[in-house]
Length: 316
Image (cartoon, rainbow, N blue to C red; front, top):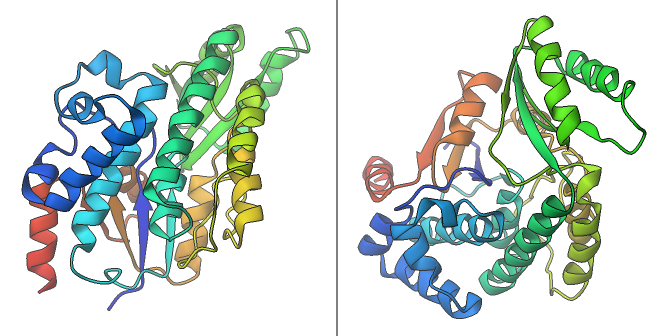
C-alpha cells in the first residue's frame, strides 16, 4: 500500500451546491451540516446547497462553509472504518489546516467550526479596515517576486504593505498588501515576463494587515481545548509538524500574518516518502497544484459522491 497523505481544501474552493450530493447519499454527512446549523445559528446547509453565490463568497461565511463541507466528505469517506489508508501525514491549505487538525483528533468538529467562524469574522473586519488585496503572479521565480515587492515598497510610504502570501507551486506565488501596492506591481510583473491576476478577495490575507485578526484569533485559540495530533499535521507557516496545543495555537496565529508555504510543505512530504495524496474538500485546487509540484505523484480528489463511490469501488 503506498504511503498516503491527506490534504484538505482551503478558502476559494467554494461553489453553490457543494456537499449536497454527499449529504443526500451519506446520513453522516447530512448530520454534519445539521450540526453546523445548530452551532452557527443560521442555515449554512442552505447556503452551501442553494447559495446565493455572493453570500457564499463572503469570508465570514465561506470559511465555515468549506470547513463543514470538507468534514462532511471526510466523515463519509471514513464511515464504518478506521482512518483509510493509514495516512502518514495530513495538511491543509490555509483554512484547510483547521480541517486537518480536526481530522487528526486535535479538536472537535464544533470547536473547529467555532474557530473558523471567528477567524472569518476577524479576517473580514481586518480587511474592511484597510484598503487592500491580493495578486496571483505566475511565471516568475520566488526571488524575482520578492524583489518586485521591494521595488514597489521603495517608492511608497513606510506603512504600505506588499509581501508574498502564498508560495503555492512552481511558477505561482500570491502577493498580498495595500491596494495601491497591489496595483503598482501589476505592470512590473508584466515587464518581468510574468502574468499578474488581481484576486477577488476581501483583503490582504497572510500579511501584516491581518495583525488585528491574529490578535483576536490568539484569544479565541487560548480558550479552545486542543489535543496532541494522532497523525502528523504540517503547519503552513514553517512546514513543521504540529506537536502539541502550544504549537497549534502559535502557528495558527502566525498563519494569518505570514506566508503559506504550500510548495515547501508538499516537497517535504514527498522527500519523506509520501507516494500518494488524497484531496478532501470541494474543488480540485490542491490536485492542480500538485501537478506542478510533482507531476508523477498521484492525487485522488474526493469532492463528490461519485468520486467517493469510485474510490471505494477501486479500493475493494
